[in-house]
Amino acid sequence: MGDAEAEADAHASVDEAKRALGERGPVWWSDGAPDFNRHMARTAPYAEWFDNLPNAS
Image 1 (tube, rainbow, N blue to C red):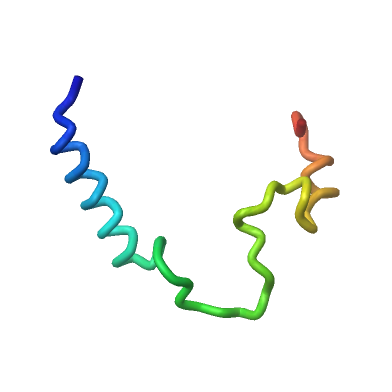
Image 2 (tube, helix red, strand yellow):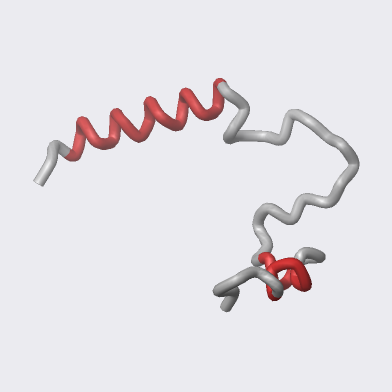
């Protein structure tokens, strides 16, 4: 197995970089549109589009 401390340090470094890039942390923009990022496509307004995709299940 790997070095658990080194792995934790690597995860922390990635998290820090993603936060600096605005990929994590509080939302810093607002376009007024609802946020469906944490919804399954079939339970969001995109359900019909999703159902028509090849191999949608």
